[in-house]
Amino acid sequence: MDKVPDLKYRKIAAAFTVLFVFGILHTWVIFPPILRAILKSQVVLKPGTRMRDMYDALPFPLIFKVYLWHVLNPDEVMMGAKPKFQEVGPYVFEEWKTKIDQVEDLETDTIEFTAINTFIFNKTLSNGLTGDETVTVIDPLLTSLGLAINRDREPMLPLIAAAIQEIYHKPTTAFWTGKVMDLLFNGIEVDCTSDDFNSKATCAAFESGDVKTIVPKGDEEDKYLFALLGSSNGTSAGRFKTYRGVKNVHDLGRVIEYNEEPELDIWDGDECNQIRGTESSIFPPFTAKEDGLWAFESNICRSMKAKYQRPSKYRGIPTLRYALDLGDIAADENEHCFCSNDKCPVKGTLDLFPCTEGPLIASLPHFFKGDPSLFEKIESGLEPDEEKHGIRVDFEIISGTPMSAAKRLQFNIDLIPLEQIDVMKNLPEMVFPLMWVEEGVDLNKTYVNMLKYQLFLRGLKFRAVVKWLTLILGPMGAVAALFLDYQKRHASSLQVTKVSPVKQSSKNGNVESVDPSSASTQELNSKERY
Image (cartoon, rainbow, N blue to C red):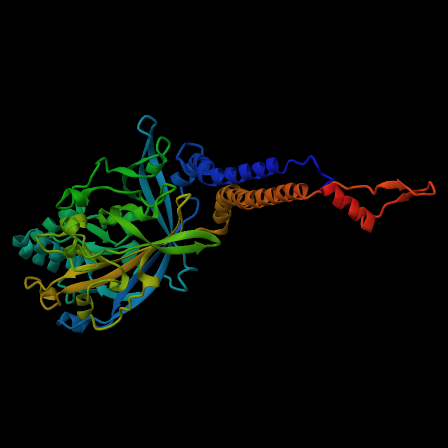
């Protein structure tokens, strides 16, 4: 310690204390706004930025899967028996999303665009399925014609019954058997060549374009094609107006208008007609997990909220797992506006008639989280499983990035027997499964590494290094310096001045050293004390 007599240990301790305080301030006060500023510059939808380019045209496809419910006992069901189902699929498509006809308003910080979804069949991912497989399903057009009129304009039901006889050439079953791809995209022929008044009146709706799933068959007069998904391929999915997030990053991607309207006019109440959240391709950063994830789903005419479920991880990046279901509308007073004609759909379902003008009921696949009564009408084939049939998203909350997601929905026919239509008079009353779809994304290695570099290597890991260096070295250095200072001061207080031995002359004139322990010396010291 004598070698460094001028070392200022207290100043060193003070310096390490300052380092510790800086670590606290940097971690919880200084760094968060810096990270927010960096992320804001990277995620806002300014023209020319990487995020805007991805928003305008997603550089990779979503994976769109279709499963059909093949009916094993159609003849028995025609007589009122419970159906036996076999799931057929998946038929896998690449779904490419683009936004066209954009109008940007810097003053309101908004983008207006038309959303286009294009589907391309991927035979490889379909595990050998080609779309040429033959299936038997409840006939979605025939049954919908009767059921929709029965619900909305019941007095016209005899007219529709007569029209079905002409258009379908005296059908003998309420089921359709044919190739999968014809049902999904290529189209099933609808013959409107009859001169019968009832047929012409019904086909007028096809000609006007009021039925979105029906399109003209090329140049053939009075012939049309019906397909469940064909009309949605490469055509408009609606006109959206969203926030760019430049002025307020928490509004990033939020939909404020759909088809030039700030709210829907579909449901029986303002609460249900509100447009909330984004259109699910982008979310704001720094979302509190308790707030959930809101997204507007135009295909079912409502906004949905995914709720936080648990921590998760995707390719080494910490994420949060969110999940949602259709809930129990009858039990939630805030959702009674989704009820129709004072009748609420059973738990786990949503009545889509106000949205599609067709007798469709939405549910999760296999009636997952659905009311037990849904299963009572089915003989076999449905096996709900959360991992396979739930809606979930693994969400990186700091950047607002969906890392992995699966949005699943089943479409069912709200089936009842109709006495006026021969092929429907003995059908069971039930929610009849038709098909279910999954729209999914799993970010590939390229985009995961990009996020890791931008967020973790440049941001969070830098903060972690600074945090632990300062929070550990600061206290340790301060304690060490104070300890050394204490040792130095304590050692100084214990120092004793050395006394040299007294020299005295002997009788012979020689100088002799006096031994302090000698008797004469002790006697001298004793006298001196007195």
